[in-house]
Image (cartoon, rainbow, N blue to C red; front, side):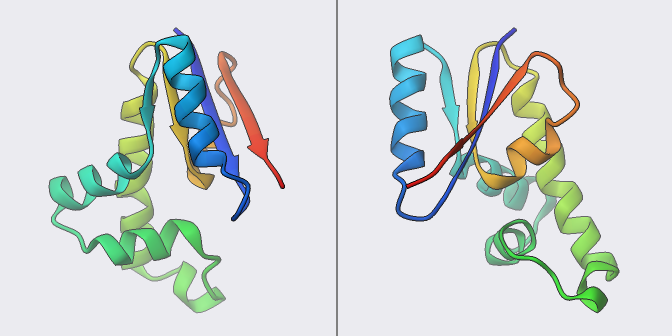
Length: 111
């Protein structure tokens, strides 16, 4: 099983690179599907999920049950995607959540 977890800076075209790598290797590429699946499965607001994983919460926000719940929703979807064979997962949360997985290659695209 091969997992490529990619993070990227804004303007680096990291999402396009991830898609191109996936196509070249014949892997599935997962990006926005994570948030959409979590929102649908857990009946959560898409924007709230994105805000939870893409921005650093203030101290008081980090301890709120809703913030922890939203992060758990996204984490469950990322880990579920990682269970598939041959996958590229693009997003800041993917490298963080797969940090201890020995067969996951974590890459950061900078520009």
